[in-house]
Amino acid sequence: MKQKFNVITSTCVPLPLENVDTDQIIPARFLKATDKEGFGENLFRDWRYDKNGDPIKEFVLNDPTYGGCILVAGKNFGSGSSREHAAWAIAGYGFRVVISSFFADIHKNNELNNFVLPVVVSEDFLQELFATIKANPKMEVEVDLPQQTVTNKATGRQEHFDINGYKKHCLMNGLDDIDFLVANKDKIEQWEKENR
Image 1 (cartoon, rainbow, N blue to C red):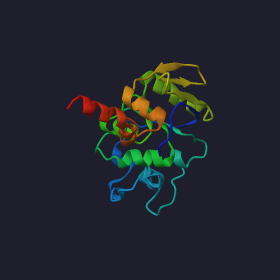
Image 2 (cartoon, rainbow, N blue to C red):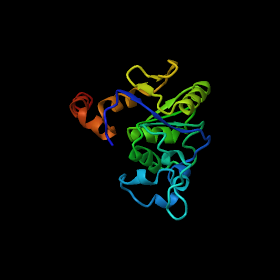
Image 3 (cartoon, helix red, strand yellow):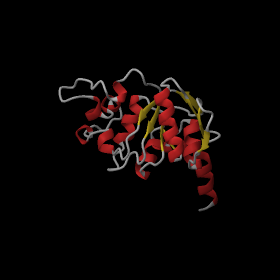
Image 4 (cartoon, rainbow, N blue to C red):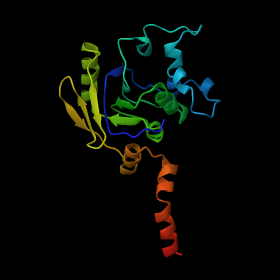
């Protein structure tokens, strides 16, 4: 899942539902595993499949009209429990970006830790994205991490988004927290020598 992040331009998968919690993202019965592999198969499991395990055609992930590596979600995405498995499922499915007008803080950090970029936009911009995707499912959105901008390519409208500087550095360089420490080992050792 470690991938360097720069500029991503992609079609989008719309999920215009508010208050999507982590149990809806990945149901609790799938939390026994401690390995990140395979979680994408169960992303939104109870919305994607019926009780017999057959795909529910109406659900957006089963609709071939939509695709891409950007999920556009309603307000208050990732509320509920702090399970990191929800971010594993999103990354495992292949989403690189989730756009919403509000994220639960813990889930937002879990996404960042799993190389998924959560982009917070205004409610007005979010609603424009939903309308534009509905009008043309092949429209694209550009997410520029270095410039911290998100652009609706169909309308040209652009917004700036915030991101912690450390997390931005890690995403752009494909580093998790351990990688970052290892990369700075010499500086850490030098500081320890100078500050004994």
